[in-house]
Length: 16
Image 1 (cartoon, rainbow, N blue to C red):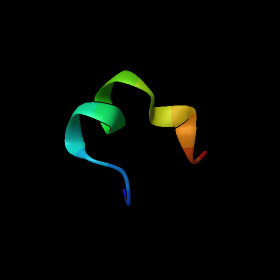
Image 2 (image 1 turned 60 degrees about the vertical axis):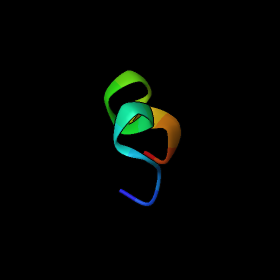
Image 3 (image 1 turned 135 degrees about the horizontal axis):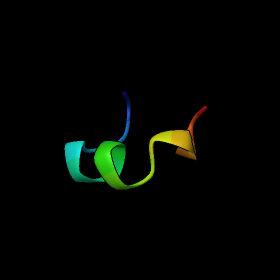
């Protein structure tokens, strides 16, 4: 995703 990898793992629905 556009977000960093740690963010993509902790908050996957951040962009979903």
